[in-house]
Image (tube, rainbow, N blue to C red; front, side, top):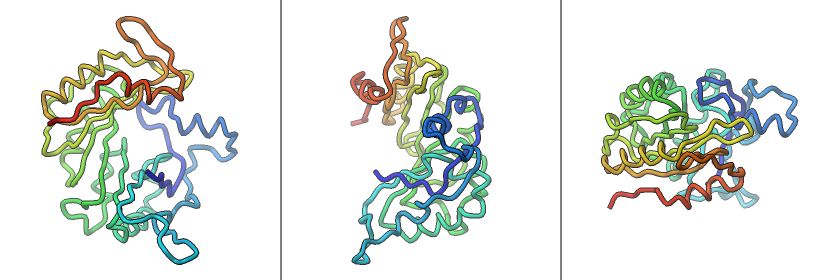
Length: 242
């Protein structure tokens, strides 16, 4: 899945942002421009790029992961975002996925022809604890969207999502821990509880990342970054309804 970052840079917005990987990776690279400075990148028109034969580099059916190092809804991009919607509209033959913590801005940031949603756009809502879930999820479910999923990451505590897990509205729940030296630990029983909620509701569930510190049966394990996704898969708790 190609990553399409039309702009880079963000601001820490809520509790889940404390140890944000974007800030950490910029620091590791020795980036001189502050991560808090939101700026366009050379990838701005990535889905429309063509090769030397004038053919689109990305064929129909390509799935793009959008704004991985920022937030599509961040305020500094208000003057650029309409161009991104234009590109997504032009590439109706591709699918675009982004997630956001700024869901309260979504209604004001949608294009005028959005209607009840675009078939080629999936929006993920990021929540990290009970208070953010209780605030963001009612807003998320009130916005017209064709495809929705919930991202519980970094998961900072046990969260009850049952009242919002309607299969006709939510396509998937995915959850994971926090990475990095100063990561807050993830308890595996939180993951199992969230999985049970999804099983009861008939909604797919994915445990996508253990995080650096995973507590299982009272014992804390340190998991290197390169193994965190694989170890989550090995836990074998993903759920796909029949």
